[in-house]
Image 1 (spheres, rainbow, N blue to C red):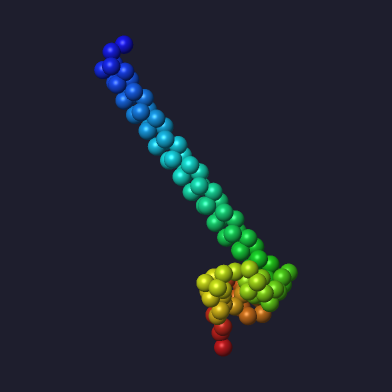
Image 2: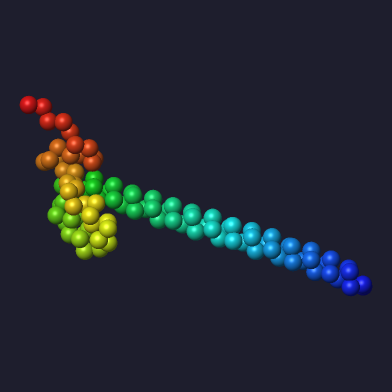
Length: 102
């Protein structure tokens, strides 16, 4: 085999290697993205379930505030500062404040 043929073969193998590495990186990124989306969906569903349990009186709003204060970051705590959890008593069921007619 001549040096030119070895060089061409080496170049082709290097190109294949680069393509495989690129494909692998793309697949790893897609897998991480899918895992993040699933994690976000779980958090949304869990939050909705907690809010529904509060609105039905199965959990207390105080418990939810304590949970947020104990485990949320300072940045995340701030979004609950003026938040009122949905309850039948405050007319805020399913996170939507009902209009009060007088």
